[in-house]
Image (tube, rainbow, N blue to C red):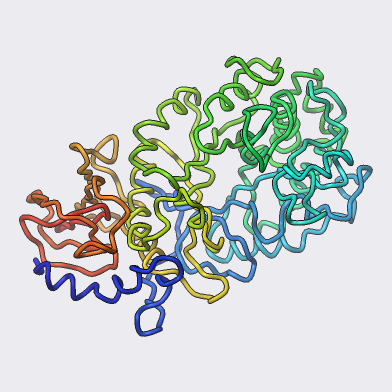
Length: 513
C-alpha cells in the first residue's frame, strides 16, 4: 500500500484544482484538461446491474457526442425538442398530421443518441404551448419557464379544452400525443433514430399551488382529475390499452378522434407524472385519490391503472444519498404497489443555490456519484437519469462553454460506470452498512470479486483533508478475498493491503478473478 504522504503528492494537482470550488475544478493546475478515463458504450442485456441504469439528460445539441458513458436518455429540457418548440406555429385546430409540427431538433437529438448505441429512450410530453392556454394563464409570471419569453408562457397549465373535473374534448393533448408518437414510430425512423419507448405524462406536477401549496415556479396548475385524463388518453393513443374513466370512452373511440385505427406502439411503457423530491401525498393522490387532496379528486385508482412506472426526482442538493435511501424512499416504495420506481431526474442539484451542500467541493461531488448510483440501485430504483450532462451549475459533467469535461466529476462518473455496469451484486440489498461504513460487494463483468467501500460520516469538505479524493481517515480492515489491489476515484491503482484508509469517497477493492 502507498504511504499517505505518497498519495498526498499524487493528488496535489487535483487538490489544488478543487480547493477554490466554482469553476476552478474544471482544469488541472497546468491549464490542461485532465484526460478522460477510457470507456466502452453501453451494450444492453446481460446480467447484473444494466448499463442502462446510467441515464442522462443533455441540454444542448452542440454537446454531442456525449463524452461519458450512458445507456439511457431522457428528452426533457433538451435540444429545444419539447412540445412548445415542436408545435410553436400550430393552432388549436392543428391535427396530428399538420405540417406545423417542426421535428428537426427532435430528429437531430434522437439521431445523436442512437449513434452512441442508446435505443429505447424516455420522453416527457408536458409543457403546454402558449396558444393552448387562456390569456390569463399565458400572463401568469409564477408559471415555470415564464422568464424564457413568450414561447414558454403558460406552460404549467393544462390545455384549455380539458376541464378541471377531467371532462372535455382534450383534443389539443390528443393531437400532440398522436403527432409525436406517430412521427417516432415510423418503421424507417427507428433505423437511424433512438426509439421513444417510455412516455412520461408531466414533469414535477407536485410543484403546484393548487395541489401542494408549493411556491413558484409552478410546474402544474391543474387538478388530479386532469392528470389522470392526460394519462389515460396517452395510454390509449400510444399503447392502445385501458380506457378513459371520466368520459367512459374506449381506446378505440379515443383513437378515432385522432384519425387512427390502431395504437402507435403497443409495446410502449407509460410513466406516471413525476414529483419533485419525495412528495408522497401527491403520488398517493394521483395513484389512488385517497390522501385528503387539497384539490377535488374523484378518480379512485384510475391513475394507478393508467401507468406502468412511478417516477420520483431524487436530487441530493441539501442531503445525501444515504439519507434518501434510508428515510425517504421507503414511503414511496409502499405507494408504488409493486410497480417499478424510477429516479427520473437527479444529481447534486444546482450548485449556485445557497442551501446546496455540495457547491464548494469538486472532490466531494466526484465521490457523491459513486455513492449515488450504488445506493439507488441497492434501494430498488430500476432507472436513474442524471440532470444533467451540460446544464450549467446543475449536475454538470461537461462545460458547454469550454467544450470539455468537468473534472474530477466526469472521471468519477466513468469509473463508477466501468466498475458497476453489468456487475452482479453479492448481497441483497446490494450495499450493506455497519453504522456509517458501507460496502457494496459484487462480481465484476470480468469475473473479479470486488467491493465498493466508503464511510459516509465525512462530509463535503474533501479538499480541506489530507487526501481530497479519499475524503476521510477511517481505518478499514480489508477482507481477505480483495487481495489484488485498490483503486481510487481518479483511477489510480494502489497495492493491496490488509488495511486501507477510507472516507466519504468510495474506493474499489479488487480481488483476483
